[in-house]
Image (cartoon, rainbow, N blue to C red):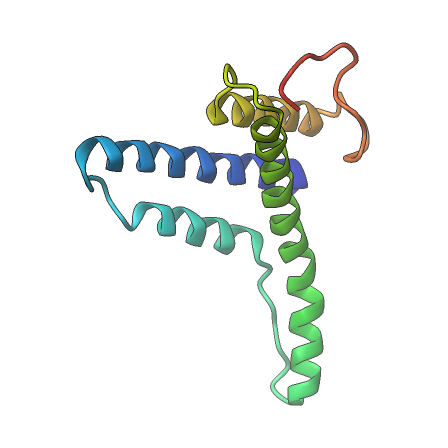
Amino acid sequence: MEQSEVLKRVIGILTEAGEMQRHAEEDDGGGDPDAGGNMVTTLLNETMPHIAIPSDATVEEMAALVGREVGGAVEQLVGAFTLAFIALAQIHDSGQEDVTSADVLQDLALRAEELSSGDEGPEGSEGPEGSEGPL
């Protein structure tokens, strides 16, 4: 899965978690408590590679194989959650009360879409010239 797709899925999970929290506060505990876990499980199933382990592999070989194969997927997930956290934390720390967490996540999703369409270049590049979003 491409990094931009992982980021969009993470944004979806965070957005849904925010909605679930708002509904829980309004309904005093309503909603499906397993919904968030289901989304995370689905993301993990889609991002984690399928690994074929030879039947004669030693424990050390299995550990090395799993570490090598799973490491990249874990890096993608951690990177996406980290980027979302930083975007949200920057707005919080700046004291901008007119920008909601949903606004920040929506802006981040739009930037991820630009990344996946190739409009922004390498992953580490700045946003589009003249952009005024929360990031």
